Image 1 (cartoon, rainbow, N blue to C red):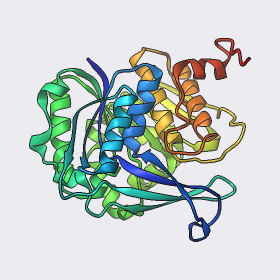
Image 2 (cartoon, rainbow, N blue to C red):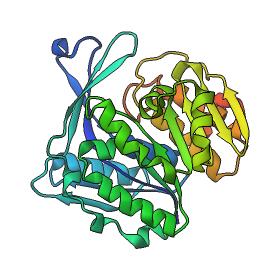
Image 3 (spheres, one colour):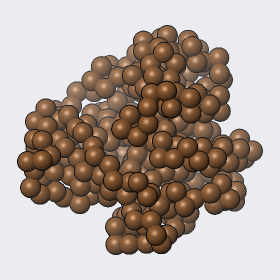
Length: 316
């Protein structure tokens, strides 16, 4: 049984060896990125069983990602290496204040080789949550057909559908994102979105207005991520504002939202009350921004317990 399965594109992330404009950076470190894979890693480190559905290039980078994901305890039986499609890359630019710009090289992404027929119904029978993001359909409009099939199977077999819009305006326009993502919302059970993303999708940025606007769609859990201002959640008529967890130092903001998502899903699957879920998810987000890299800062469950003061951490 898989607690969380997700569909997405993984890539090699080249992280700069120094801060500042990318044109002046002379060295990069090879890491692994991809929002959906980050969530799978975050869930696995917290102790959930996670599975990943994707395609990678049949090259050294693809094999590296496959080996890394397997080492994190993620099921990769639905990940295949394909010829003729190089594994996607991105290069990051990190400024002194922790702000990040990402430059993508994914024009011939291996996930373009996928079709709806590649979605295995048997895999969905073994899962509890299907996690989707807006990145996958932004790669190519035809990927919405794959989402349609995945959503159909999730509903058929009683999976909860978790959705993070994760809008990347380097990949599509606001109008394209709005049109595509509005079609997904009616099927969602757990919405994990940023306030600025919801402004693009529904024209509302204030959390309470967002929640009032979309709760009638039947979405059970709604979480509005506000970065350094914390988060706002809704479940079963309860509306909660959760203060941010203080980050000792912000060095890289990439992956914080994915960490929040994994923490929120962990809390939902464990039946926690909304307040505890939000505190837990906020804490993970604050831990991720203190570490360079897309997923290097995703914590293990004991790490979060230590940060929350639930267990004693012995350092020496």
